[in-house]
Image 1: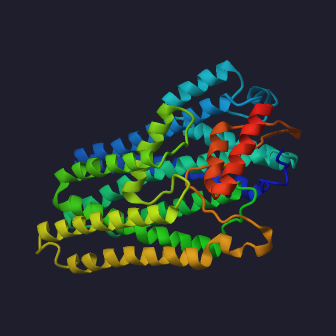
Image 2 (image 1 turned 60 degrees about the horizontal axis):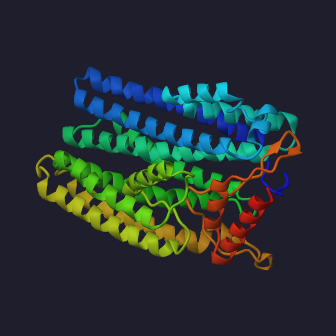
Length: 421
């Protein structure tokens, strides 16, 4: 049984971060609607439709993930007793489940999760008791959903914005600032997710600020050039960008399937997860299974380097030499160099700044890396009373954090606990 002291306590600062997340979510929706209105009023009806389409696609995907997870959580042992104890805001009987279904259909499930996390976090902080485990549990779910939103909406929208700038061959200062801010936001969201993931592990060192900064620049210099190369390709062959995505996306989905991902608790949910991973891989690397991460990462980056080279070469051959004269040469050099720099920073991170490098040698901790999109099992505390809840989905994925021997031990412990229940 996991004690309250095992997990990091949910602090008032964590609560303010969750509250800030709601504000940024509402600001993001408002800014997206403002951009869509601007495109519409300037007669860019097609781009307005594409922009809104990204918003709707992202929203539907997030609501599906949220609803799948809520359905899985309802099957947990003693979950209803925890709901009746007032420790879980999201569920309280069949009527609330029906209400939640309605809210998810209305695309409000993600917002309700924010409200639930705020309420749970406030209760934990106000009562100064156990319950941090479930607050962290909710916060990590939100972090995962925000990461999915980032690559389903923000990354495609950023590509579209860069494409419009390139096609018009004109950009205002605010557009440059917007592109830079959006790219930075995407990279930071990846860092935020990994910090959340590490803090969720009871025996894993947190990612320090220096390590986070290095991690941020690694992702910034890998994601930025990828988005830029896609936008450049689209600027010369706009009718082929969809074909390019539809060519690569099935390959990524099949690769995720071949790696044997098991993030979701149902076949339909797992198919949704693999399809989403295919979209994320179109822009950035995301580790989804245990095993030799380095080899898979090497294969991915070699594939992306080859694809990006093709995109840039196509743009260089089909570009308007006169219109692009002022920036073409600098782009064709800086984009590959930035990507190589990102890879070098990634190597530097694992050699000098990875949190496992600071583990004391006598602790006997196994060497492992975090599998993205994976959460460990958690024993939820209900107002000071220990309620032993086994989340099979989380238990299966906990093994992906460890080496083979540790993995077997984790899976064995899970099976033993489940049988005892």
